[in-house]
Amino acid sequence: MQSIELDVDVDENNEIHVRLPAGYARRRAHVRVLIATAADAPAGNPRRFGQFRGQVRMSDDFNAPLPDGFWLGEVR
Image (cartoon, rainbow, N blue to C red):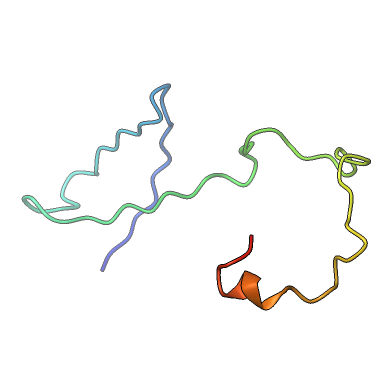
């Protein structure tokens, strides 16, 4: 198996268009494409430490064992 690395851009339709170098794949051949984003590419909104402070409450019985009915699918 051979591999090459190409830099491509994602368009507004979330599509990429790749042209293989001349002579890379003789005739029609099966190729496997691996997508890896750049380390500096933003992945949506960055999370901030403490951004949900005060919005989550832990139950007093958090560590209590769950009833058998939970594990048997009888209780939610």
